[in-house]
Length: 349
Length: 264
Image (cartoon, rainbow over all chains, first blue to last red; front, side, top):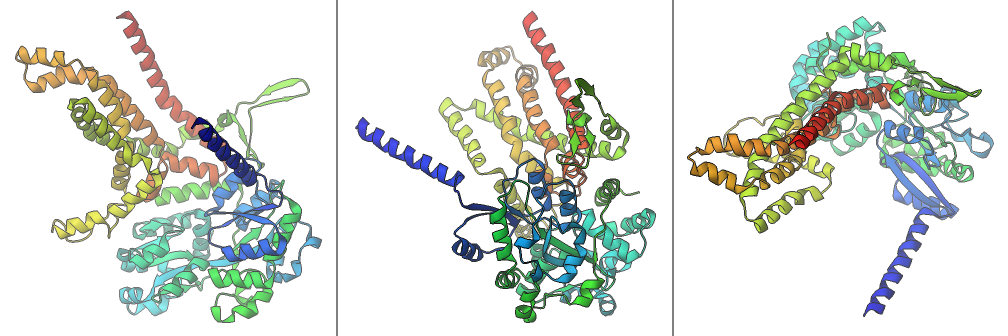
């Protein structure tokens, strides 16, 4: 009996060791760290089949998680997708990324507008996903609440920054995005004024009417009916409008922020494999698939012809009108963040 | 150590207060973050509001935990084991899932509101989440065992003859509790309170999920100092400040108690 037991234990042990070694040591593995829900399994399988590499695909849901990994030393990933401002800019400034050899990738695939706006950082970053920040609302409900005023303000930031309008709709729930970098610049655009006093004054006025601050739960709240209006990312918003026909996404007429998520290679990555994956991403077919699945447009211009009926691609004129966030100094960022936390905590005086 | 460092534009975003070059050992202690921490009412307010929530949760735990522990200690030994194990069972599921469970229960369309409406106690669904109430409920639920176990162990050590003797001498039950059981279980109560209060103080996940992340808690401030401001020394200063504020008095108390025990 004991010999049989020993034998089985031995077999289990060997299998276990073999599996562990296989998991941790695979000579041709590429490690990718991407936004939640961007690449589907089939795309990854396709890449595996094309190149013979094994892909380990991990996801994150906020930039902070990614930055924490990168800052603590060797992240172990070969490709990451940081948001340009304020994250990727800071990260490439402090040398967390490998310089990119442009001769090894098909840069000509990328829309020239994005190459222009990223010129300063093109050594380290390749623009990939992009989108806007706008307003997502339940049209029927909002029309009912605002009555005649609706048509006047339906494309305007008045809906979230004007206290008269907010007073009429706040009982049904209004949410803003969670971080100061996503909201304060748009408020400044709306006020056409950069002074802290004016901004503070406006924040004080609107605070009683804001129910929530969320960058990720607004869709479920809108669908459940806990919210009527939410400040939203374009990708998520478009997906939601596809599922619930009452929801409408608008890009505010006063202007808004353009967000860009870049491809970057962290220090110490396996460069050859990273380039292989980047070239796979830059293909028209891959980009089309990603946009079709997620409603998030990519910067690959050749994919646009396949996506005409989706209504997610911004034309050149609109793109030119959109602003990238300004790069804040660290003092500005600390001050803004503090103002924001006090504002959220109802204690702005 | 980091709390006395300097912020720099590098990875990691700080420099240690010690350096060694040209055979020379430099010490450069930077107290600016500790100074800001003490002088800026923003941080003090955050700390105070965290203390408030932690205190409420601690008292809540005590009020539920003490009777529970007392009831358990009165059971027969085998039953005690069963109850204690039953109490631990929910804690085998991950912490996050339990908190999400509370989100489901307390939401506007959740079970609690549904029951209250069915029983005609309320007409409109109540908003439980998004404020201090939800946070305290979550904390009390999550940290209750930390209160029950120490109190239970203190209570089960009380010699039943003490109580019997008091009863024989005609002491009313209330005073037996106040004069015998309470003082003898005090060490358990204090241990339980400490075990609940300290983690509640720095709790980040529960306020974030059950509260409206607008509640200014220390956890939230530390998070934003780390991730948004990239001001690691400041975040570390807050942590060090908390340790000084709470752990030092505890250590002094502990040392005093050991001395007293030694004299006895």
